[in-house]
Amino acid sequence: MWYPTGMDDPASSDTRHPLGQRARVLLTSVFGPYARDDEYGSRAINPMELYHNQVTREQGAFSLRMFHRSWGLMLIQANLDAPCVLLDFPSRDRFVEELRSQPWDVVGISSILPNVGKVKAMCALVRRYCPQAAIVVGGHIANRPGLRELVGADHVVRGEGVRWFRRFLGEPEERPIRHPLITSAFDSRTMGVPFGSGKGETAATLLPSVGCPLGCNFCSTSAMFGGKGHFFDFYRNGDELFSVMTGLERELRVRSFFVMDENFLLHRSRALRLLELMRAHDKAWSLYVFSSANALRRYSDEELLGLGISWAWLGLEGEASAYTKLRHTDTRALVRRLQGLGIRVLGSTIVGLPEHTPDNIDAAIDHAVAHDTEFHQFMLYTPVAGTPLWAEHRAAGTLLDEAECPEADAHGQLRFNYRHPHIRGGEETEFLRRAFRRDFEVNGPSVARIARTLLEGWQAHRRHPDPRVRDRVAWESRGLPTLYAGVLWAAERWLSRNQDLARRMRTTRESLGREFGLLARLAGPVIGTVLLGALWLEERRIRAGRAREPQTFFEANPAALPEVASRGAVRCRWVEPEPLARDEAGAAPVEVPAFDLG
Ligand code: SF4
Picture 1 (tube, rainbow, N blue to C red):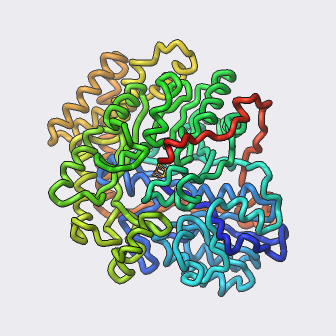
Picture 2 (tube, rainbow, N blue to C red; picture 1 turned 135 degrees about the vertical axis):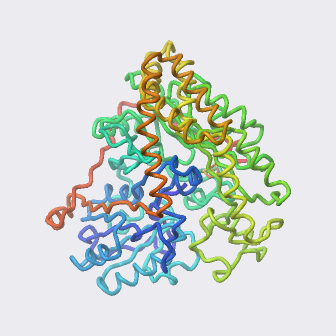
Picture 3 (cartoon, rainbow, N blue to C red; picture 1 turned 90 degrees about the horizontal axis):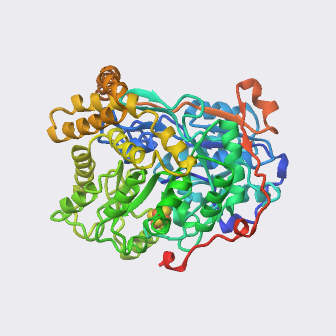
């Protein structure tokens, strides 16, 4: 889980740029292409597609393919008055062209750690073409000790980036946060078919807070924002959040929100105030959230239904793991409970916990697969710089050096960057692959699992007494008798060699037929035939090794637009928070119960 915002380095927190708000700022993500092996550390197995990379990578043509913008950079840009241009996913040549186009005063580069080679190359390009520019590096990469010297930056900033940039440019730090208009994904496809391109079909991204106070030892996001006990709210209460959400709803014509908050439901008073306002204003929104098990457990079924929780990313970690958030939780029962509410679950499991051995790894994988979540992320237990786990390994002398494991390969989807107590170096690559494959062989394509759980939610709640819940459930289930019937028909045939799986596809499709009648029975073969053809083409594309790359975005805030509009920049857009009249509940501080912090 990553999203780069700048980071607040105490060593540079007093620094001010001499030009203040007159400084011209260029923000950029690292240059592409990404989905290939190159000298900068890009890896073909690691394209700029998060779901495919670490969730559905072994699902072949069924894999969920989509790109996500650099949300942290968008947030920073929307909140600066100084002229600010954002270049997202440039090529190296496009980045150079931009550097040469005008004398930038500040260049901000955001990155994750495996892209350190690219950041170094980009800093060198800035020095060459814009020697006057101050170079600011942020994002997860900023957790790496010695980064400033390694890449040749002026400032490596850790923590929350909006305030850092405002301070750096002499702008008021505590001003309310404008929320950029962000569509959660672009260029989405599965089974070789694009989806989500229509107005309002893709959720808006909502950024309520950053960081997670639970501070699990491996969690780089939590570490990046201060670790255990720390987080930063952009919107402290339900009123502010509701105001921003209504703005996003209006501007993007959406009714669903991808809530990019590491542990949204942990902030219970804020979530419950939001529920109150959703009820009062008749909002039948869908919320896709990240949540720890202990936070989720504290909500009743009616609260989850009322809040429109439709999708949850849930850390399962491992059966015997000692994480406080999982204490006293039967995770399989929790997943079943959520699915009974129609909530699609993305379970996240760690491969290579300290207790894992070649002898027990299959049992650990089977335990994960038995959750039968709609999606399953598997990640190698990886000490990432800045985390307590990394400090532990460094103290024990068990980290591998750059020659043994290049930083470009330490992304959790290939190999360990340390010596595991029981697993010999290299074995983990196959264990990880085995986990993904077994999940697919047993549970089938994620898109078919979604259909099953949507149907379960539809059957259980389509007559719910709250019209908002009925409305949302009907909206989320609208594709069941048509598109999903076709998906199941095609999947059944595509996977016919795995009889158990084919039977599962058929069972769900027949249930759709019973529920929706003739329409679903006809749509299955009609739409399914088209999808079979698309699957075949997608398979051919994958076998030919044809990678997909995100398009380049070039956006300017109002102060920068006059200078760059002629070169094709578009104006970045945002919503201003307009707090409603607050009552006591709405103004209540964020509540993080002590037991959650362990
Ligand atoms: S609960 Fe999740 S987000 Fe929070 S610290 Fe643990 S792994 Fe990170």
